[in-house]
Length: 298
Image 1 (cartoon, helix red, strand yellow):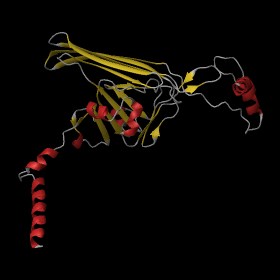
Image 2 (spheres, one colour; image 1 turned 90 degrees about the vertical axis):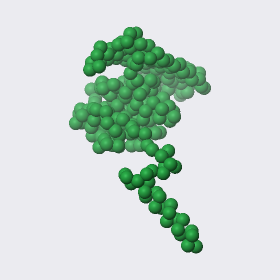
Image 3 (cartoon, rainbow, N blue to C red; image 1 turned 45 degrees about the vertical axis):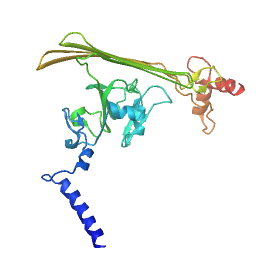
């Protein structure tokens, strides 16, 4: 029994000695050193451990391992965040951090969570459901972040940083296929033009048929059809000078989920009668009553 107690005390002493600043770290503990994570949550590069901000930082390797291909995929890997793709799959991003966000996606409404791409503010939810391609890191800053990122960051901010052009040639191509005729593709090409001028271009295309059939017009809803392209050029004329030119283009053409066809019957009064009689269905010119009757008959 005494030998067993002595063995336990010896192991405990070794563990305590390994945590002191002057002691020698045992060989088995050296493999557990944490890699330093650099973030820009305070507009400058600094260690995550020294940043007094509630931030979740994911680099390209972490994003790839977690299967994050789109902004909405952050729901599965980042706590306190909820990304809703607006009305079904309209390509609009309604982002909430710790319950603070904005449901209204109107052009005159500011979001409660700011999105920044290489330091440039994306002011509206249209097209903000970003696809992750050639991304260096994503930082989720819990709010409020108004001091450094402006008034539209009550809930927090999402900071996207893309990979910059470098002085080496590299490239990549990716393809993904799946059901509902899914066919996704992405590419990246980095090429140095001169010793001081580099360029980098990357793009992604997402396509998939919808899984909701509209019996009225035969169209598929909740499909995916997005394309984006990033072209960057970096000029380094001297050690103390660096100029970046970034061009971002994106296009989204998706049909959101249709609303349920149901007449207003629970309410009484002239409002429900006026709506059921006069409301027009977009692009048909038919009244709400005509549309519902034809849909139910089909």
